[in-house]
Length: 398
Image 1 (cartoon, rainbow, N blue to C red):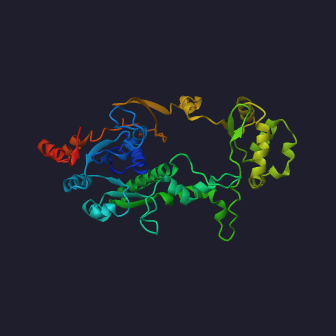
Image 2: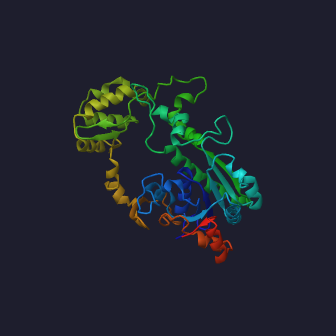
Image 3: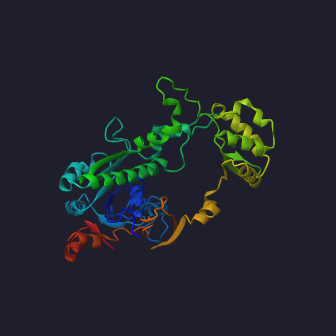
């Protein structure tokens, strides 16, 4: 069965991760995603260690651009912009993540393009939005982690030193928010017949993402807690005698189950931990107390005890172990596919499973300009015109 977005054409004028990852979700769901690349190719092809002899692919690029078609064109040239404009006249969605003002200077702003194609859904991804004192700042993921409070909530409990997440969480979360917004706009267009202009800022995204539990003490106006309460506590990584586990004791039944698993009846009598509110307010003492018990037995022993007591728990897996984990294998979450010039590669399957309209990995990541000729022919260019564009370096084609 075709994907839920089959028949939707998306023009991907993005680089790095936030944009490419968002449009990859759309490709997984059946959209025809055309990746517009500069003549030299997307920066992530070469900003990480290449995994092919020609230096055209990195693992990061493959994992953010699978299932797309590549049109390599110089949009700084008039002929390149004409190609892009002609393509956008037929497109359903444009996603771009240039710095604010860049597209307008190229004559490719939302006003101009949506006048030509009123059904176009024009999406702009930025670091901090297009207003405010930081609008001209160059922004990457760590900048957003710093500004959003994300690094603060990861602060070490003793030193209070902020810590960054060692993955590009702001980029990838923004990608998910963007893909959801595109789906909503496509649905709205079915009712109104009109496209929309969507702005998604990484800072806006991460503050919204952090808020529910990360900003609880700042939710009620006039009743703000101190900055060290309640997040100044150890994390839920517990050392066993031979490894690490995590477990949760939010509900009373879970706490009572943990107490039974320890074999110490006195622990259940500690009034500090007898209610969800008490366990929350005394989190540091509770977590440290749990660690005193957990360190005495092996990971396997604790997982067996906690599972028997119906306490949420899991081993903390090394990344190399994740792909072989019994639950991951049973669910067939990882797919192997052929990536030209590289060989077999692993990719996670789309996380959302559709019963009728299947989401799936549409194919490997493209070479630079791999589909330039077929896309240009579809736009009405003949072979002689394409050869002229390639010779003039306005287009790169394989």
